[in-house]
Length: 107
Image 1 (cartoon, rainbow, N blue to C red):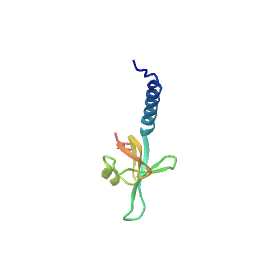
Image 2 (image 1 turned 90 degrees about the vertical axis):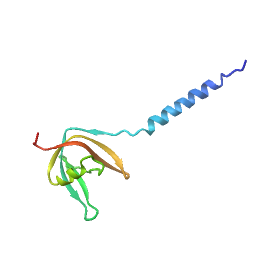
Image 3 (image 1 turned 45 degrees about the vertical axis):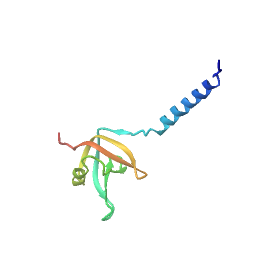
Image 4 (image 1 turned 120 degrees about the horizontal axis):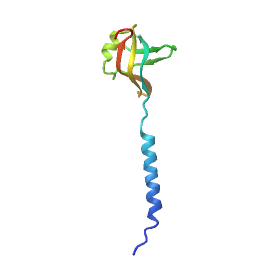
């Protein structure tokens, strides 16, 4: 009979390491709901970016990967209510990926 008691600590250590690695590698994405922002364009042609300005004056670029990005672009200078969005990292920068929105004051 072979004694495999040395394998137990090794297997437990390997499992703990894999669990820690898996937990750390997941990207936590913050969800934003029910907030109003003003849309505007920043930068100079051809390097313009669509931005969102929050009520506290903070700004954030809107990701071109937003499903209705072209519609959002056409609403520049308007205020929208974000129904659901996520903060994402894109090109080493935090951006707002707007999934659902409505015009402010329009139901």
